[in-house]
Length: 96
Image 1 (cartoon, rainbow, N blue to C red):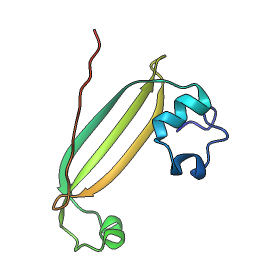
Image 2: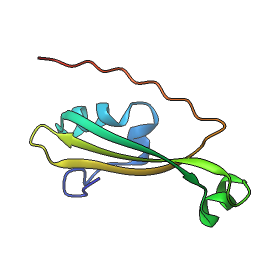
Image 3: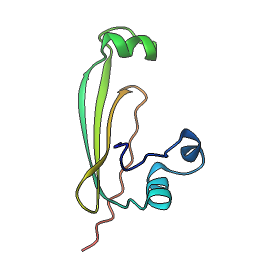
C-alpha cells in the first residue's frame, strides 16, 4: 500500500474493520476493482519453515492488485496458501 495514500494507517485501525472499509472511511479511497491471480506451485524453502510444511509440498500462490477509482494500484499482495486447507469464495457484483 502506498505510504503517501495511507500515511497514518495503523494495525489497530484494521483490527475491527475490513481494510477496504478503513481505506474508504479513514482515507477517502474508494475501491474500484481488484484483480487476483492464483497459480499452483510447490512451497518455497522460506515458506515451508513458517508454515511447518515439508519442502516440495503443493501450494497456491496468490497475487492481488487493488485499484482505486482513478485506476491507481492502492494494494499489492503476495500470499502463499496451503493447497490442502484452501477454500475460496468469490462474489461478483458487477454494476452496468
